[in-house]
Length: 138
Image 1 (cartoon, helix red, strand yellow):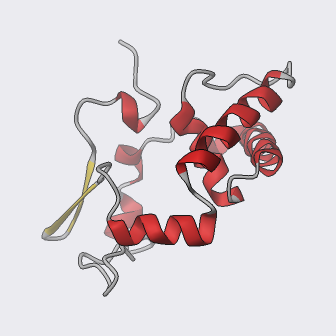
Image 2: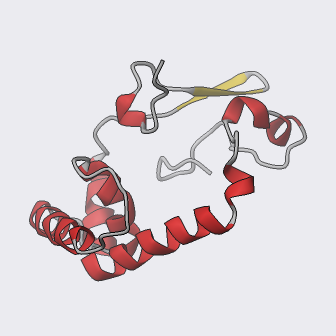
């Protein structure tokens, strides 16, 4: 049985139970306000998204020793978004991401949320059940 590695590959989105609250991943369309913020702060326009994705794909193809999900634009966007859609910066971030995973492979071995429930039970990591005034999770 193949285990999904991306949220886009799962049929049912995972949820986290925090006391009496259930937090559900939300992959729907962002709100208009979120879209405006993305345009203003991240340069995330349809044109930038398309051109940056194509350029990042081209840059990654030149990295012969790098294995990545080649046909998954959403995976690329995960790195383009924090780099404000600058493909060279996103490529460098991807390389640092994989270098970190290699250097700290012992941390990632067997790392699944179901085995890490204690971080929620001991309030090491928590998410407020209610959103802020802008609709964001904290």
